Length: 555
Image 1 (tube, helix red, strand yellow):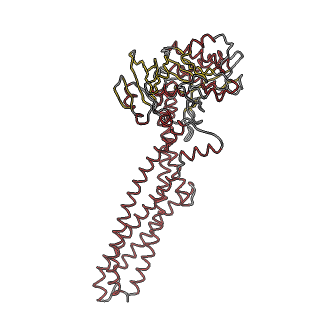
Image 2 (cartoon, helix red, strand yellow; image 1 turned 135 degrees about the vertical axis):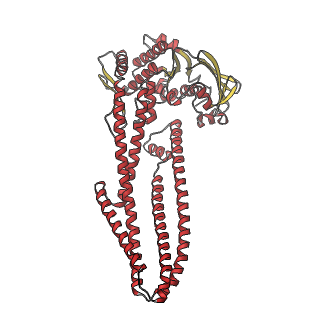
Image 3 (spheres, rainbow, N blue to C red; image 1 turned 90 degrees about the horizontal axis):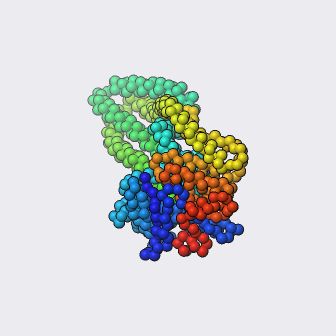
């Protein structure tokens, strides 16, 4: 696994920082704030978070555009350890070099670099924590996504259930899509789901009856007894009429298909852009970091690309259908002209004319009712699809439950670790129960639930303590990553004595597990009278202050 031994930050050829990190134990990036009465301003201008972001680049993070714009003349050179071997890694901070990584002076692209050193960013971002989050499952949303859950299962060594959980997510999404489609169709038909079978039965009967009636009428037209002049044109008229009706039926089908495709295409236009999401939050004075905005934009771009591909396929099909309609229409015009010529000969036959008129009316009725029949059949198929997917989902839940039963002892170990951790943090009675569980079968609610219930502390910082304790659990038990990074913002609001204790625990875990913990912290967040102040001083690898910030420039 990959570790960082040293980081040099260059401005051109000038070394701005030269920092050595501990390969085992805690490396502290210390904010020596000299004006604690103005904590917000001074602690945010030192470069602690920036340093963590630069370290993250050596672990395969993508270069942020805003960072490149600000530090385009800078580069970082890191001495890394991988499988007990030293590797020199260089990354230039100019946007033109965003996809390049220099490994022992050999340039490779970023994706190759991550593959070469076994860096799975979906896992690393769960241990490189540079901003506060909203969930125990290392998510920046209160509703963890599929990737959040799967990464959590991987890092807690519960990966055996991952395939089932992934399939549950996918099946739930399929059911959601089918349910939305059914809702739209029923809204168009002005029906409820309970009325579906009844209406489909009645429509099927009506279509059968009208088609039979049309068949009898066509036969009657063909068998009409006409005068000699009329009789010799009857066969030709009948053939042309059949061909004309076939073309019209074809057009009806193609037009119905185009209507369905256009409705489907319109249903894809209800997306909310990342800009609109950000604007909505900004209106209530909630701001996003540039990293979150970029992630939102990437998700939006991916979603738009998929939708655009689907729209293009639909548009091509609509164009193809439209061309066929034009060809059929031209052929119908030609046939119509011929029929008109013959019709002049047959115009004196009232029975024939009345039959043709009735036939045209019947055809229009058939056209309308067959479209409704198609929509009803489609909705019936969707209902069947939902039923099939629901059965599949139930089986997946049952299988996942069997696998989760095998993890009872492991989850108990994790629960004991969290319990013991909290006992170290509190000098008063505290009750805590940590659990990783599978929810009961549900078509909508996501399957894995991670909870931590505490009694004995109702302070404002309890949420942050819970999240940090889960960070420690993953740091301790995961077999994929040998480093954890925490930004000072993740300790905001926590009692200074508890912060000191948390840092000590991070250090002990890192030493026992032979891993790295790199944490930024501010002086005002610590208890200066604590017994472990000497330990804090020993852990410092970089001290930043108002007069000695990271790069010697204002941020």
